[in-house]
Image (tube, rainbow, N blue to C red; front, side, top):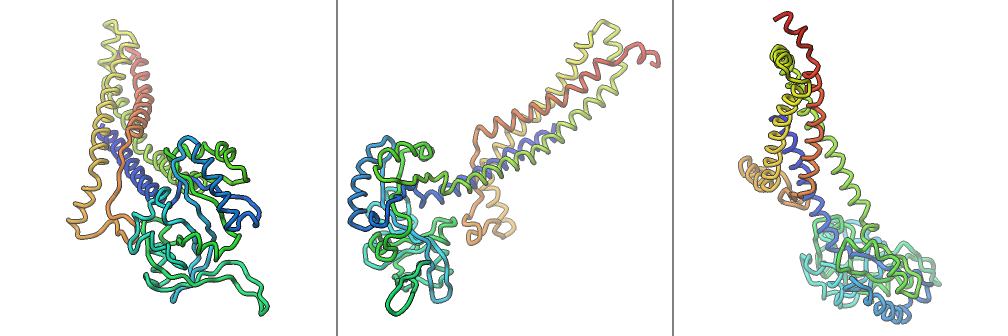
Length: 390
C-alpha cells in the first residue's frame, strides 16, 4: 500500500512540475511571439514602401473583419549579424511599429531599460538582455548590423550594413533574450530594402484557435500570403515538452508497476498461508467465486487506500512544492534554481485535474490486473488435498 502511495504521489508531483515548466516557457515565449504571422509572397516591387502601405491598409481592413482577429501589427524582419565591440552575434532583427506592437505582444512590459517608444527615433534598436551582454554593449552604444547579402557599387562589392544606436534592452527569460532585436519599420526598410520577411502579426481572441484560421486568412487577403501560426513557428519546442511529459509518465509508471507487483506478492503469500482456511470454507459450501471475491476485496482495499493516499499526498506536494524548495534552500544556504542559469528563481508547478484522473485510473488499472491472479489462484485451491495433511 505504501509503495502504491509513493508511486502515485511521485507521478502526480512530477507531472505538475512539468506542467509548471511548460506554462512558464509558453508564457515567456508567447509574450514576444504573436499568435500568427501573415507573410506576403509578393514580388520585390510590391514590397516597396508605397505599395506595401497600400496593401497593408487593404489587407488589414479585410483581416479585422474575421471573427476572433482582434489586432494586427506590421513587421519586416531578417537574419543579421550584429557586430559589437567584443563579439559578433547572429540574430533576428525585426522592424516593428512601436505604436501598435503592444497590441500583439507584451514586449513593452518586458523592457529592462528604455521604452518601446524610443524606437521612433531614426536608426535605433533594442536588444535582448542576453544578446546585449554577449555583444558587450549597453544602451547608448552603437552596433553595426550586417546583412548576409552584398551590394555592388562602382568601387566594389560590399555587404549591406548600417550602424544603429542601442536605446533599450528587454528580458523575458527565454531564448529570445539571446537572439532577438527590434528596430522601427522605417529603419528596417532602409536596411533590408525589398528583402526579408514582410507582412504583419496577428493576434486572436483565443491563442489555441490560431492554427485553424489558415483558410479564412488566405481568403481575406487578395495577395499571396504564407500563414504561420505560433504552433508552426514554436510548435517543435512545445511538442518536445509534450513528448518529455509522456516519456516521464511512462518511466514513473514503473514505480506504480512495482507497487502493483508487491500487491501480487502479498496476496499470493496470503493465499499460501490460508490454504487450510480456504479448504475449510470450501467444504462448508463456499463456491470458488466466493473465495476469489475475498481476495479481490482485500486487494482492492489495499489498492484503493494506497491510491487515495497517493492522490492526496501528490496534490498536496504539487501545490506546495515551490514553498518546500524555498525552505530547503534556506536550510542549506544554496540556490537550487539560479535565475542566471535557468531564467527562473522558484520551482513552478501547475496541478491539472486531468493528470490526477489519468494517474489514478492507470494505477487502478494496474492494481486490478495485479489482484486477478492471486484471486484466481485462491479459487483453485483443492480442499480435499489440503485437508489431507492437516
